[in-house]
Image 1 (cartoon, rainbow, N blue to C red):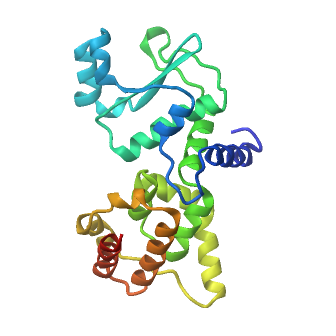
Image 2 (image 1 turned 90 degrees about the vertical axis):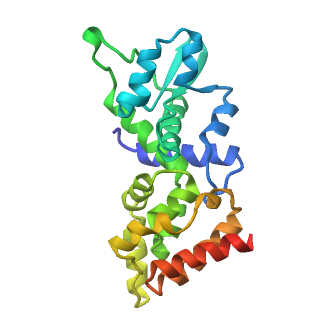
Image 3 (image 1 turned 30 degrees about the horizontal axis):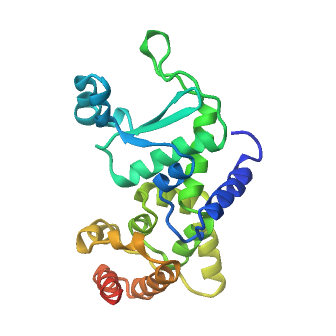
Length: 249
């Protein structure tokens, strides 16, 4: 990745989110961003009515669903983003934002398949789009706020509409985890952590989809309440906190 790109990605993401009137603690919906650019987003299953081979679609959505998540088709100045509906909402958010990141970065388009049927890609451009997509979806300040209370990544992921893996990557890659831990040590405290077993059990304990619809103030209130519950060190306390919070909405 070229020197200085990470800082440039932060600035570009901040500008894009500002144009969408999003606070750093707001969720970014890639479909809203695409609409700002007048770029349609359609499922690959919809391409059958346009002449796509049904067996090829079946291959990508059923047989080998990991092979394709999203891609951009360009014809002249027209753009179309297609996605695989077999993927989770969290993964699709990252994949769609990745495609939009290519456009924001004005990457030169190229063929997806080369001679012999092999995939073709520019690794540097892919790495840049990956990073910009992640910054757009989870700003560093948002990741830091979660890290300061030891929020399980699955809860942060539900808030920002991403996968738990991306949430963890942003928290770790930005240095938010280290910063939060260092600040806690200076105050003579430790950041609470749930056990691996509790983290595994948490998604089944309560619905978290509602977190994505909160205002920034509501989210910050829930975040603080989760921090207090985490100090008790119990997944039951955290689940009860989330249930109480949704009941008070």
